Image: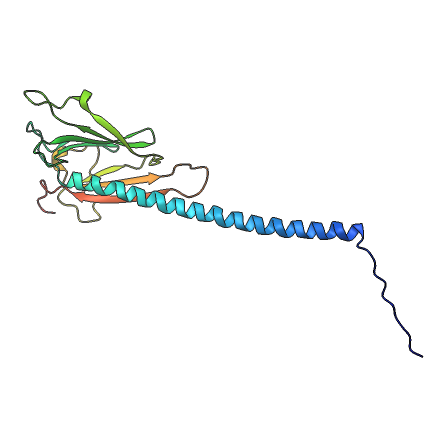
Length: 205
C-alpha cells in the first residue's frame, strides 16, 4: 500500500511576522551604522588632511616673507620684535621698492597677519594703517612657542634663544603651529612646522 502524504498550506503566523521584521530591522540597523561609521571616519580623516594641507599652504608664503626680511624704508633693522607669539619684520612683499611692516601674531586662538605700508613725508609706519588678515583658526599651542629663534651657531639640534631674545642675534626662525578646530571631537590636533634662514642676516648658516 502506498501512503500518500499531503502537505497542507498554512498561513504565516503573527509570531513569524514579528520575528522576521525584527531580524530585518536589525540587519538594516547594522548596515546603516556601518555605513555611517565609514562616512564619519572618512570625514574625520579628510578633515585632518585638509587642516594639514591648508596650514602648509599658509606657512609657505610666511617663510618666503621672513626669508627676504631686510631694512625698512626708513632704515630700521630688518626685525622689530621677536617673542613666542608675535614676530614683526620688514620686507618688500610686492616688489614695488617699498618695505612693508609685517606682523604675524596670535590673537585668542586665531593666527593673524598685519601689514603696514609706510606713508607720509617723511615716511612712517602708522599702526592705524595696519591691515589685518585672519590666517588660521583653532591654534592650540598653549605654552608651546609659535616662534622660536636661533643664532648663527644653530646646527639642527641647538636650543632656541631664550626670551627675551636680542633681535640682533636672530639668524633663523622656526614656526610651529598646533591646530585643532574642535578639541572635543576628532580629528586629533595637527602640528605643522617650518624653519627659515633670514637671507640678509645669515653669516655662518
